[in-house]
Image (cartoon, rainbow, N blue to C red; front, top):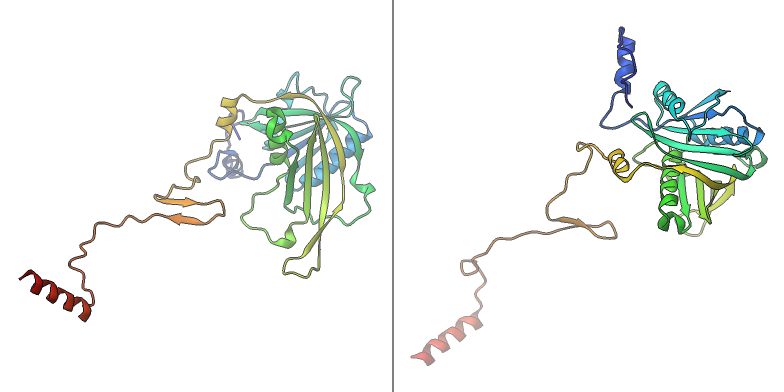
Length: 295
């Protein structure tokens, strides 16, 4: 995150704070700020609370109302990103023109990169599902369903934004029992259906357990309204990775569709005449006969 507007530190604690804000080769896990608009209703408030619970502990929830209009002026959201060092945001409001509205977005260098306005058409909060919840801070398994995530460019960018928003902490390995949370996103006719499940591992006849899904909420049906996406050049710049973390290309190595590594070995020219081979009597006899015939 950028630190251009921060004052120069005078204490060691302040210096450590600013160093933590500096760009890193391996960035921190993405944190989200949850913001209430100037006017909200119970539906928007409950939706913000449930999405905050899904994002915890990588989320900061602001309890006061903030009369912000993100698509007209995004300076306030950028100031929150600078203050709390967050790269994701969720803004909820309710008005006559934009009923039950959620604005989901992400930042790049403390400036809004992408954001989309989603109107809540149907909502069932997680408290209405009488089932056991998942462990705190578990890694979600995100499923994108629908051909619109592949064919429509705007829906593809929305799916990329939602995966970035819900993915949680970056981990190298995860055990089978840790896959408790499943977040399903289905795109159909300019609508996105959010469903949240908990996995239950059951006994099976084979070595792998049988998996059942239990819906734990929230259940939200969104309709896509306004959107503001970055240009292709800016998006490619935001996606750049440092050379230090990019895997070096290995010569004469390739990987097939099954993940098997294949290597090509170049062998120099060999002198077969000087190789020591086993001399067979039958071959020696044939050579003597050929010499006698030639004489």
